[in-house]
Image 1 (spheres, one colour):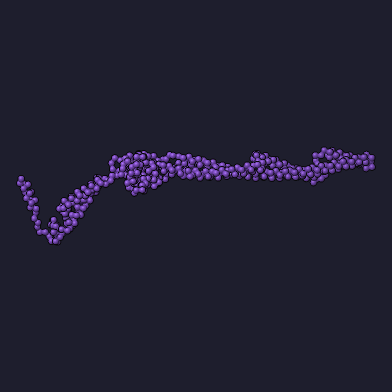
Image 2 (image 1 turned 180 degrees about the vertical axis):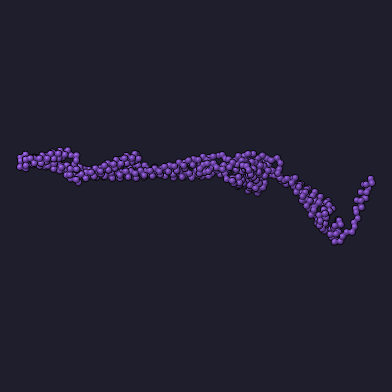
Length: 454
């Protein structure tokens, strides 16, 4: 069937299509009149995306899914179950009446009914490039729609505060428990430090260690000097009665000078008088006496050197013992200082941990008591003056389209049941033979001629 044939069929049965369109429009108008009216209230809320880090306490930007998360919270059962308690008294009375109408007797639960109704009919639209959240609620009563939506916004704000403060409250309790443990650790560390100081009588360990170290350095220098002196004394003692060992003894020097002079005179007398001369013998006796005195002085000096060496050796041993004792004392003090520093570090670490936990505990305690939120109602919902459902204009358009489609379908069915020839193309298509001639519309031709002669 060609398009021209279809148009001829529709034109031939236009009354049927028009009648169906009128019937559908009338039916839709009647149905619309009896459909319940529904009203849609709307509100807008500003969502600030800043949150606080619970470890550092710093304010950071929220993640990209912040608005979607808030949308889910608004539609959540936890928020919906709290709407009823935030309703004004007049709106609550309307909700009670509505719940009594739709729920069976004996099982009327206005709060439960309103919770389910809100979750089914609320719509949340996050702003694409803004922090504004649009919320709408549809209800049969405009007052109920506006009141329930405002209550939903209030319930959401309080729920968001609870979601923010509940973790802070739990953190505060956890920090309080940790503070008790940290306080015990700090007390134990301080007790260890105090006990160590009392046990070893430590008051000013660093000053005492400096003093003992200075004494050790002094003993070290004195020990070096004593070692040098002892070595020299040992060398002198080993030289015995040699003159070089006692170069600074005045008595021996005088005796040596007198002995040299007496020996020179003895030699001279030996030449002049001979060995039998009394003067020679006297001089020889003097020389022998001087030699004996020199020997005695040398023996005394040797004994003095030996005594000096013994004294030097004894002093050296005493200094070595004092040096070793002082070194052990300094090492013991250093060990005590290291142990004391370790205990002090433990006390400091325990103190730092306690201070940090105390600060965070106070911050979480304050945050758990905070009644502020970053959510602000931009526009409160007001009762709508016109219903949003049913939409009469849309319904009429739908009825018109439906009537037209039914008319076209019915016209085609009737045509197929009782096929008629409406043009020469129908003959050619149906019978398959060409049309040799056709009679024009006589009535139309006559009317045209009458119009031209008039």
